[in-house]
Length: 153
Image (cartoon, rainbow, N blue to C red; front, side):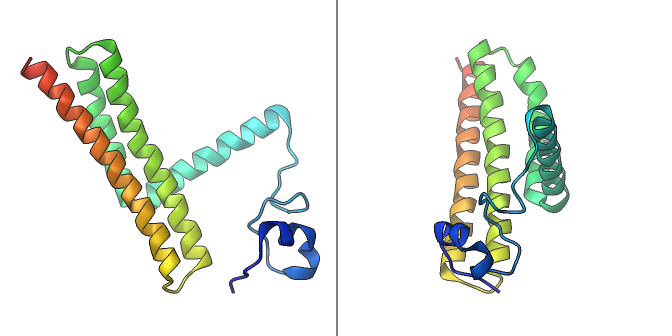
């Protein structure tokens, strides 16, 4: 069942509007963490680890990108490039992984909220996919530039 309520309306009338567990992080939400300090940081690290592990297990594209990352890592170290270029190559490779994680999150939420076909759901998924494509294009162009600098100075 899909509820169409605004965040503000939901937070104000939580008990009157919905009976399902809320995806919102309202002050009265059960999902809001009561942890503070080191306990909060520890929990956040655990949630991040769970997200990485879940994405790695369930998303083939993410697994492929992680493998490519670890294959390219020695090349970053071994290529005779200036230090700033090595950091740039490392960064664009990380951007690909970050964008893929965000895309996976978008897809999970869209699948939860709109299990049937919906034009806006398709638009959200396509935008996430396009973001991954742009990040891979950026990384590819940066790598082509680096290889050109090394071999065809």
